View 1 (cartoon, rainbow, N blue to C red):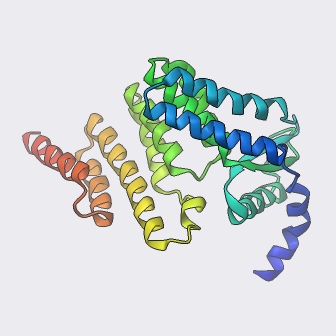
View 2: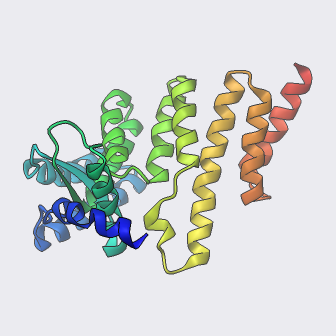
Length: 245
C-alpha cells in the first residue's frame, strides 16, 4: 500500500491545482446557495434560479479548458477527490484534452442541483436536465444527486436509464457523508439515500414487469430500514400484482 501511494504521489501533486475562487467569492457563493434552497422551500423558484445562476456564472467564468472540476466538502473529501483524480491520470483515464483535476467548493454542485430542482418545479424539465447532469458529473459520489437524476428519467418513463442510474446510486458511497464525525447520523443518512435508490430500482422493475427483481430491491431497503413506510407500501403492491400475474 505504501509503495503504491508513493508511486502516484507526483501525479497527485500535479492534479492538486489551486482553487479558482477567492475566500470572499466562496463566502458569497455559500450565501447564494443557502438563499437558493430557502427560496425553493418557500416555492419561490424563479428567485432560487437567480441565486443559483450567480454561483454558476462565477464558476463558469473562471473555468479553464484543460481542467476537470470536482466538488469536495472539507479537507478529507478534497484530498480523496484529488487522490482519485491522480489515480485516473496515472491510468491515462482523463478526458481527452484534460490534464488537470481541480477540487472546488461543493457550493458549485449545489448551485447546479438547486437550479435543476427549481426548473423542474416550474415545469422546465428539458432545461433542468443538464444542470442535474452537471451536479452528478462534478460530484460523482453524491447519491442524492444521482437519485434525483434517476427520478428525472423515471418521470419521463425512461425506465432503463432510470434503473441504471438508481442502481449506480445504490452502489455508491458518498464520502462527504461517510466522513461525518457523527457516525450515527452518517449511517442514518446513508441508509435513507440508499433506500431511496432501492425504491427507485423497484419502481422501474415494476414498470418493466420484473416482479422478482422489484421485490429483491425492496428487500434490500428493508434490511437497512425494516419499517420504511415507502418500501412496505411498495412491497404490498408488488405482492398483490405479482399474485395476479
